[in-house]
Image 1 (cartoon, one colour):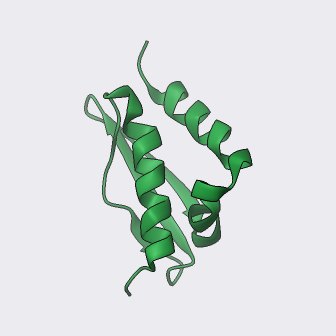
Image 2 (cartoon, rainbow, N blue to C red):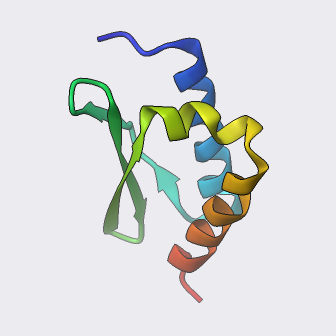
Image 3 (tube, helix red, strand yellow):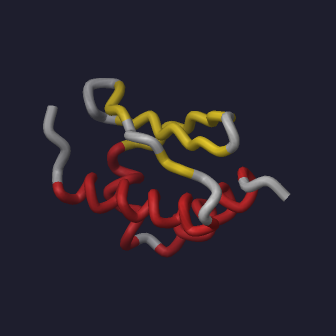
Length: 81
């Protein structure tokens, strides 16, 4: 299943947020639920966390300011002190 440009753009936007602290890395997101959601693995120092976002949330992330702060908060919470 090929992802849309909108989804690719949303994933890249999320990747930029997650990796902005230079510690966390967003690995390759995998479509699940017939492409209606994506599994987003985040890694740092040998640990992995898995999050899922709907395709709609991912597509809306770049243009929805209400999603920016929670995404930044998530990245900050996962970064080691």
